[in-house]
Length: 592
Image (tube, rainbow, N blue to C red; front, side):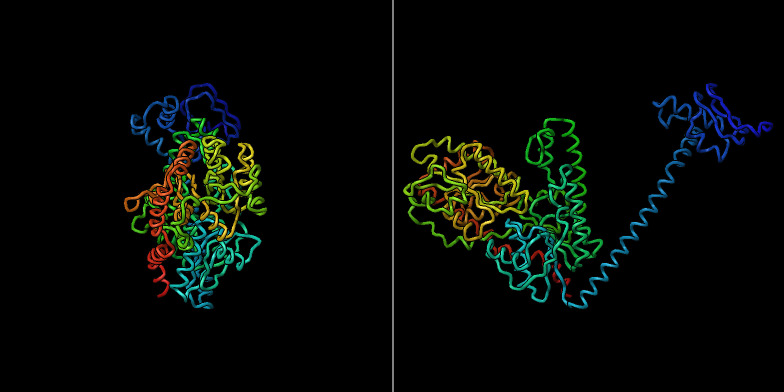
């Protein structure tokens, strides 16, 4: 070999070699062809610059390559040692790189944390009062979550007058004064002191329409970026997530060094959702093409399981965890695994505004209202069709809830059409019934959903009997509930159901979905009496509505009275007392 120092190309293909002579490795070769031999090319490349391969090394690698069914433990010790050296040569660089990247990440987090702490100290030096910030990107909407926000703010402002309060919102085109006025009109809530609004510009990051696929993951990651925008705009002492964006909690805790609390209306992922996918049931969050495909269903189950793990890690960052129902409590305990910091705080329901409505009036008139009563109502309802004539009377079936897909307004409309088919056109039939859908629209997507629902009404031939009341003031909401005979609710696994409670307080007979909060906390026997009805399908809803309408006036009155007595558990006063008790440990730390 020493006489071949000028050799540049060596071809030993097809010679069944298990090793090369050591001298070959010292040649100044530019090309070396070793195909169809027994030596392992990766081993040759890795070790040729360090030492010559021994026959045993290459033979063991050749054996491992040609007999992959052999276990590592069955190889001779020398062969095991050769394989270990090769594996470590591949793994160690990855380990070193991971350690370096982790160190850089830790240093970056510490740097950001110190920068944000400096900003909070500067703000504290100016204001000299602790700041509590609520994260609620849709605070101008008219749902139950917004009632929790305003009632919670009112309770804290009353109890801690020296604190300052901030609301992070993504609402556009409105001012802080308009948002507060909307809360007064929709919820009859007036705050004792002003609050500061921080308007976020990137709320689209948490919009479901921004993520046609992997929506849960996309919205959760988007909430982290939106939370970062909020944190850099204002650094609070205490951060409260009042809308359920759990992935913002670690952002404020670890980057902002804030105390964090959360009020959970609905777990982002739950074991019930996993069951729906496993059983391949089509729902609003499980498309038909996925439910029909076993492979896609298995992939979605794996996706949900991985997401549930991340969701639990994020949620466990919270110092105080409040949930709104027994159903939510069970899922959050299973996912977040923080029982000592978790408790049920029923959401506030405006029952006082309905308690002045008498229940003892003549039942022959209860639940009825004149048809053809006005041009304004006809416009709101989209037209009466054949509803002319002021001498006919009508049973009103009212649904209260935001126009979101999970509220399942489609089921309400289909069940109502089923009821009309059962009742026929005789006395007490089609012309004596109407469905009123009262709710709020948060964005363009919700408004488009209302248009779709109107189209469904025309398709089913019930457009003249279904009326939409969108973003109406509180007084009009109250009037609709007072005039109603039945309060309708169809959301599967509703986390709580504030609309259900309001219907019960107003004196309507509630027909709710047989799941979630309505089943476990609200429509339950009270003092031995019945408080309402439950259903879970189009036919069962239609049958239950028919049963309610067939009850005697005395039987309906007894159910209404029992239901009204039971809703005292969900009053504003009960919520404020429980909310303050849950928040007190954190607020006391800020006062020191």
